[in-house]
Image (cartoon, rainbow, N blue to C red):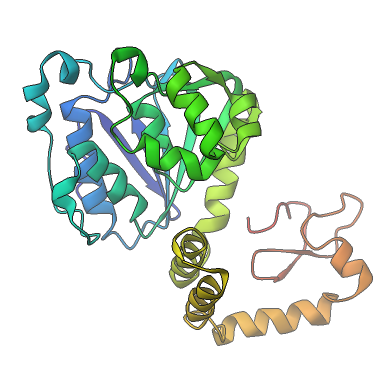
Length: 308
């Protein structure tokens, strides 16, 4: 796939994971070039069967994305320069602006999307992170804000819609109307992000999680995203259960190779007290068996975390 023509993005694909690095000096601003390149990337990667997980990160340790180009405020006509591609998501897209369309396209990707966060992310930078499936941040080094009210407006790139499902109505109003900067620990407590991790552990944690997900069958990822999405969009719990049952039908029964691994797992001790107590984590004093994401017994001193 053509990922080598970008000037503000760097894309590296390894073992089913696309690491996408934002690199738009001096402060990783969401300007016309970066927004258009993100649109182009989303259009290309959605058709790339090699990629099952996308990790979005920054080349700048001080700024994930500072904010949207303030030139759009100073010169409103420049907003029309943004790409306005078909998001292929249905609905009346004539009612949304190009920044909102980018967030819509990111949320509609078939791949799992993860934001690996360090530095400041304000306004559109925070909206960009919230549009992804998961967010993990470096503790003591990451700060979040929706400061648009300080500029006489409100968030316009999806912030008023993305934030409330994460933090609730009251806290969303606190964030948006207060316009203050929030640290990673508070963001974690609010539910804004998945976890705030020690800075030195962030890369390893996210990379391990991405690899674990990337070994899953694409059908599993599709089914999980559809089912979890139904919990938010369905009109009732019963309707959501129906969507879950429908999604399950796309992956069950499991392929024969997986069934054989399950059979081997049972023979090696799954569903026994000893086996179940050590199912996800390897006891460092044992070298006989651990389990990967498909419950396949593994041996050896290098056997580690589930799914790796």
